[in-house]
Image (cartoon, rainbow, N blue to C red; front, side, top):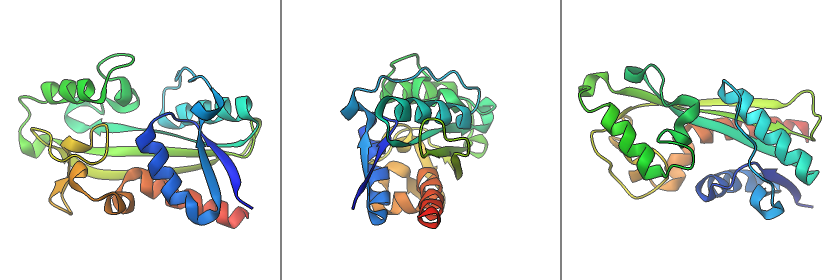
Length: 199
């Protein structure tokens, strides 16, 4: 029987990616919006703290096991910024485009050799609201920031994240290749392995 898990995200791109990867485990991933779960304030100072806050909130409101991730882009030339503020870099409620524009603006005078960056993903699974031993998985994806966007796939900073191994932006990769390489794909495969072991 397919088990239901609530995903503590309303981002359709993220829901799609995670549902694809968890389908093999007979887990049905439902976005928290389906249960009218309000977003929780991300008051953590790290990716893992924010992921746990989000998962606990979704588990509390739905009574289901919950998965949450907190992910973001760390740019070395900006001392790790936008980091945990990646999804609201240009302000609360900012669009992907506004965040991306602000990033490119901040890097205007930074030469190609100094534009190293990585996507980080911290993914958390809580069996229930009071789960004292959450499963925590981390993935990191190294690359660099382009001078202008390229490609139409993906979301967020994908169009400006250059993937050296494939000589293109993340937004130019087919979804199945991106899932293999990405920070979220890495963290999710670790989570799938941990859940499979748990039974």
